[in-house]
Image 1 (spheres, helix red, strand yellow):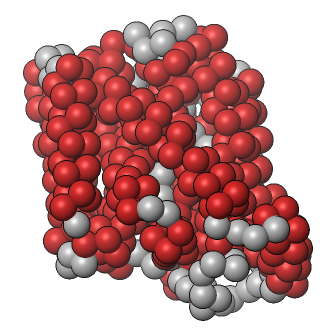
Image 2 (cartoon, rainbow, N blue to C red):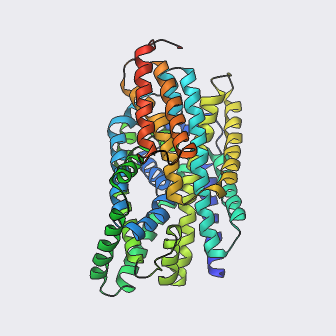
Length: 459
C-alpha cells in the first residue's frame, strides 16, 4: 500500500509539473486551440492518449476475455475511421482557419441555428463521455484502495478539472503526451511478462484460448449486432469535439492529416495488444469475472507488486487524458457555439466563460458517473447518439458546395431524437441496432431539407 501511495503521489507531482510548464492560458485563443501551433508529434500523442483511455484498454481487455477476436474486428473499424478522417476530413476542417470547434465549422457552412444545435449536442456528449471516464477511474481506485466510488469520482474529476480549467488545450495536450508515453510502454510489457513467465506452453495456450473465446463471441452475437457494433466504432467517435479541436489546433494542414492517419495505424496495434491481454487472462482469471475487472484482476494475480502498483497509475493517467480532452472540448464548444452566437463577448470574457464551463461540465460528469453501466456499453450509448445527430451534417457540409441550413437543422434534430428514443424510450422496439436506424432517419431528413430549403436560408 505504501508503494502504491508513493507511486501515485509521484505521478501527480510530475503531472502538476507538466501542467505548470504548459502555463495558464492568458487568452481565449490559447485556451481553445493553443494558438493553432501544435506540431504533428503533440497532436498524434494527444489523439492516441484521448482514445486509449479506459474504454479501449480496460473495456477491450474484458471483451477479448469474453469474445476473443470479435472485438478486434470491431475495433479495426475505428482504426479505419481515423485514417479516413485524416485523408478526407481533417484537412478540410483545418482549412477553416476562423473556426474553433466542429459546431463553429457547421455554423460557417450552414447558419447560426445549426451551430447552436451542434453546440448543444457537443456539450451534452462531452459530458456523457466524461462521466464514463470518471466512472472508469473510480473503478480502478476502488479496486486497488477500496475507496468509496463516489469519493474517487469526485477526486479524479477535481484533479483533472483544475489543470484543464487554467491551462486549456495546451495543458491538456502536454499532459496527454506524458500519459500516452507511460501507458504505451507499460501495457505491452505486462502482456509479454505474463505470456512468457506466467503461462505454460504460451504459444499453444494462446492459440487454444483465442479459438475458444472467438468461437463463443461469434456464436453469442448475431450478424445484425456485429454490423451495429462495426457501425458504432466506425462512426461513433468520428469528429467528436476533442478530435475536431485537435484537427483545428494543428500547426499545418499536413500535420492535421498525418496525425489522424498515424493515430489510426497505432490504434490497430493497440487493439491487438489489448485483445491479446484478454486472451492470456482466460487461464488465469475466473470465468465469471466482470469484464471491467478482468485487467486489474489479471495484473494483480500475475505481476510483482511494483508492476501491479504501476498499473493503476497508468490507468488513471489515460483516464485523465481522455477526461481533460473532453472537459476542454465541451467548454470551448459551450463558449463558441452556445454563448457567442447570442452575444459579442470580449476575449477576456470568453476565457472566463470557458473556464466556468469546464467546471460546470466536470460537475455534471461527476454527478452522472455513478449511473454509467459497463464502460463499453456506455461508449456505445454515446456513439449511438453522436453519429446520427452530427455526422451527416458535418461530413456533407464539408464536402457540398452549398449545404442548405434546413437540411442541417432537420438532420440533427431527427438523428438525435430517433437515437435517444430508440436508446432510452423503446430500447427493445427492434433488433436492428439503433445507430443504423437513426443514421438512416438523419440522412433522410437531410435529403428532405436539402431539396426543400434554399441555399441562403437563414444566413
